[in-house]
Length: 228
Image 1 (cartoon, rainbow, N blue to C red):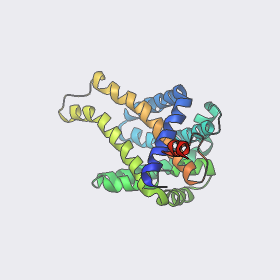
Image 2 (cartoon, rainbow, N blue to C red; image 1 turned 90 degrees about the vertical axis):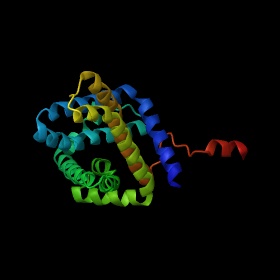
Image 3 (tube, helix red, strand yellow; image 1 turned 180 degrees about the horizontal axis):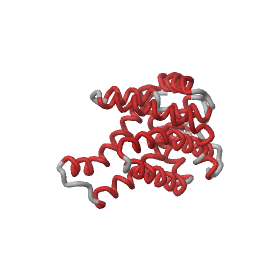
Image 4 (cartoon, one colour; image 1 turned 180 degrees about the vertical axis):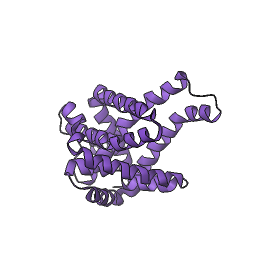
């Protein structure tokens, strides 16, 4: 499938999944964002703790997305389902997070490439129950056939995050500090962006493993059908 069609398909499917359970995904996004804020108060140790916790949290998003794709309503069991592999997921998230951060510090592009290769690493571990090394290799093998499409998705997510965070960064750099007025839009955007990115990673996993997406509709298929 051409990359631009795959990107469009996955984005449409991600929005469709969100529309199925908007409040549940939003509330989980609020929970993750709030936890991030609390951990950030502890400076570097807190950031490390939150980085590790992202593994189980995004595993919950993966389980919730699979539930929606199966036509079911995700509940607490799905959103907190990453707890059953808490240790391996935390180690996985800490490892990939630190390596990706190092890549972003090397002129951004290496970080984007690493993040792309490991885009599906959390869904792979929680949905297949495999080890850290197997999940790293599995995500890479899954992504490579659709590397350009997944890279575009990663760049889009990073660009939106950067645009939202820019006003806050400008105030910090200008030594004006961060007011509640500046901080609130960033927090609200994160409450939306974090669960959406988890949904998207899971959909890439499902698509690349041959799972038929629930709302799948290849762009142009409707018009082609009408013209047939």
